[in-house]
Length: 471
Image 1 (cartoon, rainbow, N blue to C red):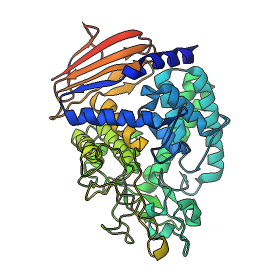
Image 2: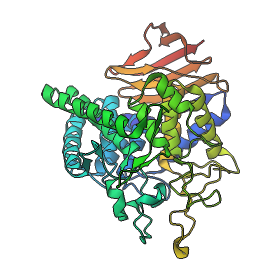
Image 3: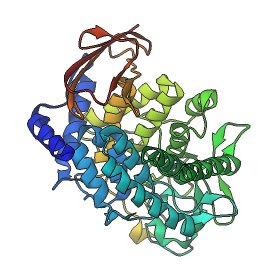
Image 4: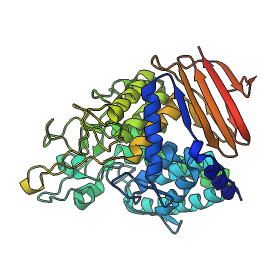
């Protein structure tokens, strides 16, 4: 019955839903473009990875659902999440980062409060985690093995990960990749253990299961800090190769997840974000440039801009309280998407960090017939959902909790008024108005009544107006 109500609510409001009013026209245009990108990439109820891709990647669907789809398009998100599982029993597709599905699934439940979904998602996640523990865990380091999150191309790895004479562009085709231990991958395993423990709590499982997941999470966190963190310099390393050699590159997604999941917190998290090397248009995926690539021929998964990565770095910046880094990423992606000499009103897959032009980069260097320039694909969904998350999480400050939605907004110098209208949330429709500047809430009202707490319960129904005034 609840799903039927969802569907009817979406059908009757979708044509008029999620309008934006903002005194910064570029933000308004970016928001509309991003939301339209999500909708045009919804095919037969499944959210595709982009205009030039289908919906077959677990990581894309999980990230897009986690970023915003579970909130703005919950029916599509749920169908998409299940579409990349095997009979709703285990998570499917490329093995090394598919556990990110668990994090997205718990987030989906937190927003939509469907216990039947949660029960099946827990079974699916627990079954998958058990298999991955048996096949991809390195007892020597206490870390999970395999490539880094989303980096399915060999260009995202140092030379030691190559198989000599192997000219395949896919990282999984290189045997040396199977025993590497990467920062981002281990961070999402940590996040998945936390999500599993919270699922157990919600489902009233035996307390021993909850504690077991919590213990595994804490043990993994200690191993991440022991092997992939430099305490003296407050920096994280990218990976440990098959021979135990540490690669000290900056992995943007890895440091972002370390902050997002609380592996590092407080002032150390703030300094980690502040000290990150960032290009003119935002943080690049992996820095610096590997020796086999150049400024003119950047690696497709190396020192280049993937907006999905920038979205997570922006989120980490908000969590760390580093709003200057957040707004730099938001402004950077706005220019990349909208500027005529860059995206020209298109959320592309990849951008050149020096020119801002769409640029798919290179995968294989040194063998002439394979040394070709890849395309950057159009209407990339996770570039768009990253932007929407910057607005909803960063500017509006929406936080989903067990009791509803709390608000921690932020308005920078170039935005003083932001309104999101007709935002569907469970059995309600929200109009959210934020005025002022900064992060300190001076006044919070719900339907004209001032509230001392800045949240709404998930049981809220009907049309509701939320006004937040900042000092």
